[in-house]
Image (cartoon, rainbow over all chains, first blue to last red; front, side):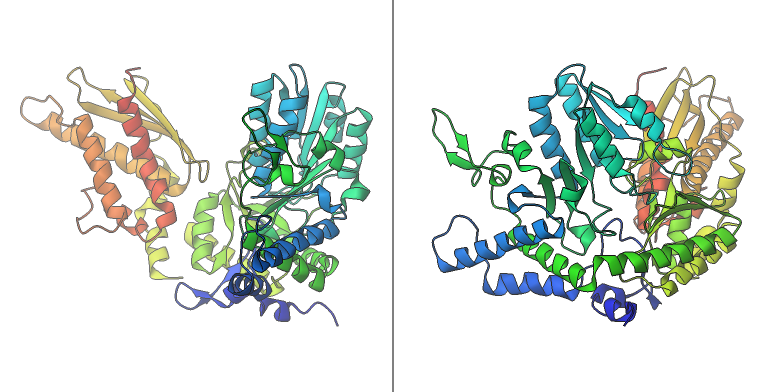
Length: 406
Length: 157
């Protein structure tokens, strides 16, 4: 049987909502945060109703069960991206994962004159943490240019990559353009220069199989809430030897071996980087989300989303007043555009009132918008539960925008 | 389309924003303030000219912003112009009555209108009532006022 989008949609209660009276919700904002299937909320509720306790610190049965369930998710996450369990650090979100690497690895390894290479298309979360550590260490942040079609300028990348480059921190997939970066080439070239690579895979894990071993990537970060899981739980993958050589990011309980006023010693990774009580219930939810994605099949989801993207791109191309940003062949279902010369917020407000939920603005990627020469964009993003009818709803909404905005 | 949206986008706000008739910096500005809405990236710079007696006599602006922000700046600039003109036409001509604190009071009144307060919109700003149901757009309207107040709080240029 083919991809049954109706059966998938039925698992997401939010999508049954009507807004502004009786308008069906057309949710095209999954790149910001995806809706949650019942399997995720049920797993979290069940855990709280039956097993909830703190983890890693109790002698009683409930704590041991909770610890087992919590650590089982670590194994699930490891399997999901082909990592070793010891290489999976639970974080709050992608932003925290990048800050962790920037502060922990960066403070130990960066010196004046060193360079951190990012790109013009990064989310602010993959720019600002590097700027902060660069300021603290005397290192420098450089940005690789983006071409007009949204592809990375690989000539510029090779020109800027050099012996001074210590870290290459790039998005796997652009959160605005949907561009899939040639990360395999980037990683090989960076390693040849002795630089490490961090991939921001927030927009990648939702659209494609990510294999950290095949990529040979050093660090990779993503967040649960874009993968149909809850907020408050993210993942940092790091090669074990790298993690093991890094000092703690945050200090507190659960990350120590011994504490004394003569000196404190720390646990091995990943626990060294998980100070304090973790987001236990959210971690359980993330495990359920991974189960859900694997049951549907990430490849099946990707193929479905590709069909929606093609359909939407064709329809928008037929309208001569829509400018799409990001037109590379390697593009996932994230679609930024402008309608005529209308401000994205005006378009977004009207679309909202037609039932279409999407994002407008700069999508935490101001440098990219500056590069594109636009102030802001409208961004539609398609997920496992979207249908061609949702795309049609967007197109109908744009017709209303034309009518009202002139 | 629902009535609220039609009212908003069929109001004079859109035509004001399209015309941008009053946009422009003031060469003789005494105070300047620029603000940005981090939510959307919209930016506006407002120039204010104070008289020797400290009264507001002119306001100019330049914006990279949405229609509601630009329309709001147009209304504000027009309002200051009208208040100043009325003052000038009074017997004796000057001083202009508009003091910086009047601008603060106006900003507060606009804020109350957006939040659905019972007080009527100040004269000249009636069109902004149509923005009230669109909570995510309130900041668009208040941004020019924020810039004007920032200008007045800043040192003289």
